[in-house]
Length: 164
Image (tube, rainbow, N blue to C red; front, side, top):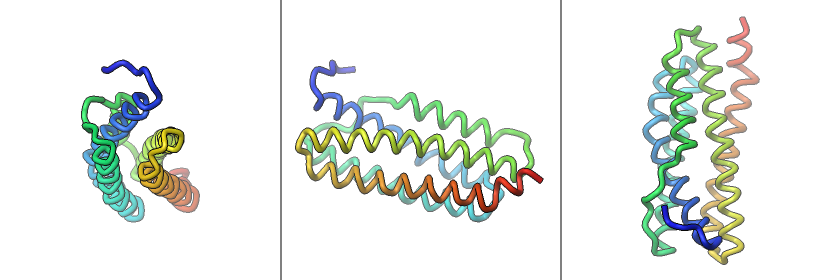
């Protein structure tokens, strides 16, 4: 890993980290969708997969505008979160209990992404990367929306069924 001597170095490192995280999610979300019992949850995971592919594209646009390479960082946090989600998929559980577990795993991911995109947008603003700010804030808004949808689905349907 390159030395982090400036805020710009930290910003680039963070972009590479979340880029790797999003790429990991592109592989994990189809597995979560397949494991979901609820049709609404499955559709939500499929919709978020399309959004995540868009997040990857936005990040690639940011890298291109900054004239820096996208690779070089492995997101260990996402690796762990994806592994937790995989454990939930493999559990021998009631279908609704498994769906509640999948929502919990997905929300951990969303909260990590919300924290990361919020931080990166702040860094981009400080550094004067206005194009990056717009793209990062757009992704941040989508991550928050996904988290809200997961909460609503859990509260209005899945958790009650899992409790029976």
